[in-house]
Amino acid sequence: MPSPVDILRTVFGYHAFRGQQAAIIDQVSGGGDALVIMPTGGGKSLCYQVPSLVRPGVGVVVSPLIALMDDQVAALRELGVAAAALHSGLPPAETAQAERALAAGRLDLVYMAPERLLGERTLDLLAGTQVALIAIDEAHCVSQWGHDFRPEYLGLGLLAERFPGVPRVALTATADDATRRDIAQRLALHDAPLFGAGFDRPNIRYHVAHGERLRERLLAFLDTHHGTDSGIVYCPTRRRVEETAAWLGGHGRTALVYHAGLPAEQRSASQRRFLREDGVVMVATVAFGMGIDKPDVRFVAHLGLPKNVESYYQETGRAGRDGLPANAWLGYGLADVVGVRQLLAATDSPDERRRVEQRKFEALLGLVETTGCRRQALLGYFGEQLAQPCGNCDNCLDPPVTFDATQAARLALSCIYRTGQRFGVSYLIEVLRGGNEPRIGALEHDRLALYGQGRERTAAQWRAIYRQLVTGGYVSVDVDGHGGLRLTERARPLLRGEQTLHLRESAPDKPRRVRRGGSAAVADADQTLFEALRAERRRLAESHGVPAYVIFHDATLAQMAAQRPRTLVEMAGINGVGGAKLERYGQAFLAVIDAVA
Image (cartoon, rainbow, N blue to C red; front, side, top):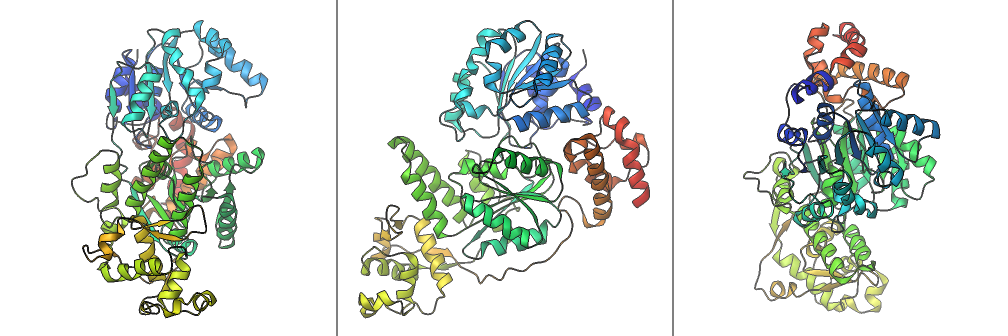
C-alpha cells in the first residue's frame, strides 16, 4: 500500500502537505471519519483524493454541481487517476461505461450528486463493490442554518447505515458553530473529530470603495492590477449584470454574462469559456460560482452588497485558490444598503429567520464600514482573533482619514427631523446645500433655519455622511415606501449633545486608468516567459479538450517562470508537476523556456 506522501509526490507533484492536510489524510486513510472546515484554496480535495488512492476500493465523492464534478474528473485523468462522474448530464453510453468500470473495480474515484447516490440502483451498485471512503463536499448544504441549504443533502445521513465501517469525511469552507453542529448531526458524524484550518486567506487583499462612479473605479483597479487576469464581478440584479458586462466589453474587457434568467445553454457556454480561457471576466449574480474549481481567478469584485459575511467570504474565496496573490474589491453606496434591506424586509421567512438575516447584514455593514483592519474584522466574525493588523487590506495599506463629524451629523439628523422624516437623501442634501428643488419652496423648507447651512460640503460628502449614519444605525430607511429616512433611538444622544462621532472622510475621487498589461500572479521580470507558458498551456488544453488550469495551475507556471528549469529532472522539482504530467508535457514546456529565457 503506497504512503500518502508517495501519492502526493508521484501523482500530484507536490512535495509536502500543508496545514492539517497530513492529519486529516492519516485519519481517513486509517478508516476514521472526519469533519473538515478548511478555507477555499486550502487543499480540501487532497484530503479525500489521497486517501482514496491509499485505501483499497473506490472513493465516492458527493458534489452538488455537474460542472464541479466534470472539472475534477478531467483534472484527475490528466494526473493518470482512474476517475469518473455519474450525473444527469452524461450521455447514456458514458453513464453505462462509468457504471461498468465502477462495478468491475476499475475506478479510483467516482463523483455523484446526492440524489444520484441515494437512488436504490446506485446504492445497490456500490454495495457490490469495495468502497474506500465517502466524501461529502460542500457539506454546509445539509444545514438549514447555512447560507446555501439544499434539501437533497438531508438524506445523506443514510450512508452511515448502508456503509458501516466505511470512513466518511464531510468538508466545507464556511460553517459557524450552529452549522457545524447541524452537519455532524444530520450526517451522523457524531464522533468524528473536527479539523478546523481557520478562515484566513492571507493571499487575498481586501479593498472597499464607497460612494459614486463605482464602475469607473472598478475598471481603473482592474487595469492597474489585473491587465490580463481572469476574475468574477458580482452584481445584485440581472439588469445590472448585463449593463456592467456590456460596459466592460466596451472598454476592452472580455466580459461574459451569467444569471438565472438566461437559457441553460447560454449559461453553460459562458461557464465553459470562463473555465477554459485566460483573461475572461465573468459578470454574474450569485447564481454563478458554487463549485467553480478554477484556481487562477485573480480577483473577485462586488458592485453592490452581499446579504451577509458568510456569502461575502465564500464569494471572495473564489479568488486565489492557487495561493498566489489575489484581490477582493467591493464597491457600494447608500442605494445598495437600502436595496438589501428592502429585499430582507420583503421575504416571507419566519420572524426568527428574518431577524437572523438582518443581524447578519448589520455585521456585513460593520465590516465594510470599519476604519480598522478588515481581516481582523472578518476573522473576528468567525470567532478567530488576529493579533496584529494584517498589512494586506486597504485600511492597513492606506489608513482612512477620519474627522470629527459631530456637528455635521447633528445637522444631517436635524434636517431629517425638520422636514418630517419622509424624504430621501437627495432631497435632504438639496435642503442642506440651499438648492432650488421645486418642492423645497412649495413645502416652505427654504424657511427652515438649517436651509443652506451645509453649503461648505459637496453633495458627495453629504451622501457619505448619510450613508455612514444609516450603516451606523442612527438612521433607518423606509423600506416599504420611497426610501425616506427616519431617526432611530440611537440618534437621540447625538442630537442632545451627549455623544461625539467620528466618520470616514469622503476623499475626492478621480479614477485613473493605468494599463498594467500583465498578471498579478508573477513578478514583472517574469511576465514575458509566464505569458509564453500560458500560451503553450492554452494550446495543449484546447487539443485535449480540458480547461487550461487542468494542464498546470498558474502557480506552477509562475514557479517555472521564476526558476526556469532546463531538464526534466529540474522540471520534476516544480510543485504541481507529477509523474504523468512530467512525461506528457515536460518537454513541451522546457522548449518554451529554452526559446524565451
